[in-house]
Length: 220
Image 1: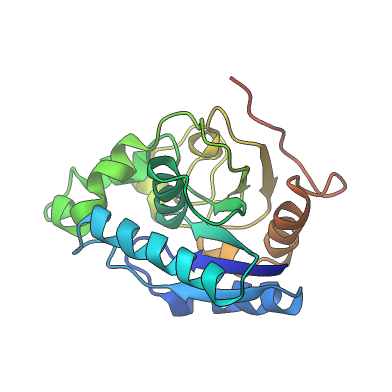
Image 2 (image 1 turned 90 degrees about the vertical axis):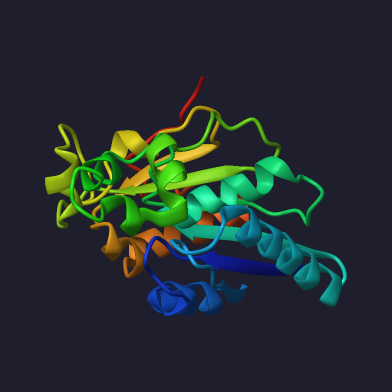
């Protein structure tokens, strides 16, 4: 069975930002593809429709295929939104990297500044509210970072562990399959060998590597 991965970038980013992670996943034997979307200027529903169409096209191209989604930051929210509204899609798993699934304090802080709302654009609601507890059938793994480099910490005023932009607590969503933390900043999650290894482990087995994990599953 062909194992496809669609990479979903974060706010203000483009697909090339995930090149290092893409190379590591490709070397592990996956067929890896980028998915570009306008995180600020496009209506979310338009991006979700295109994403579902791309998933079906990849599955149809090779017959029996699995299509996994790996999203960084906002990209993880996009992945869950895609699967929550339409389960009639090719099988696969989801990995979220540094995704504020319960809402972003940094985004709320940005709104206090001039042009903050414009900078968040059509992604503002998703970043402020996060997503509801996961009830989908697809397995979801979440990787959080703990290296505290980034301007988002200044905006978010985090109390606990964070990656400089997203707090670890913001990544813990009831209903997900597994959760772990790695020593990486928010952007650094895209370049971290450990984050890539944990992503590969989850996509293959539905669990993170027990020898590397520092987190634990989130339960209701």
